[in-house]
Image (cartoon, rainbow over the protein chains, first blue to last red):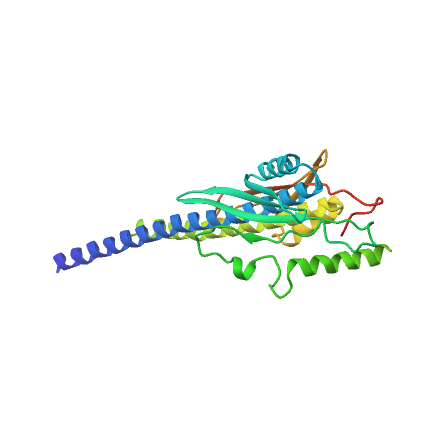
Length: 171
Length: 110
């Protein structure tokens, strides 16, 4: 009888140890996962703000525009992975944030001056950047929580609508 | 057994707090970014602060500061509770934006 009790107590300890091990592993995984998620949001914010800041320097030399993007990305705790001034006069900024065990999270943002009707040259404005996530090899909530717009309302259409409203309001 | 169960509870609390911490960081980052954008396009500091505070728990602190044309929004959120009295470190996030040029004295847009 005594022997059996001791056996059962021993097995309970094993189960508790196993549970502690599983829970610890889950904690580490949760920390890592939320770290990657946070890195993604930070990269998105840095790309967004850097692109907007760089667009202020448009039209200008690529070096000047991208230096501003690099400066603002760094201030937002991200690195500038790439910076391009496109033919349509917008700037595309790629910001990256390092995460453990994975390649850096890279997020792109675009900003530039809105297409404006020829009559309303007074209403120059910066368009909201279209956020497109770069490489995030991690199942993320971006598809349902992405702060953007459905593909049925593309960035270009919204931007021109804003520009038209703007020019009407300021006329 | 009597010793192990509380330890197990603490580990469980730690796992849940870690998830809460991650969620706080994400929320604080987004709030700081929204406030920085608003301030950049001409909103007052108070308006930008209110915008961030709306997305954050009541005990969060939002600060807006200006250095030249740079606007720094700092968000501080208390860390989530693990077990009674024990908390994870506070979440501290900042976002920096640059003032956008204005047209005719008015904000360019917004």
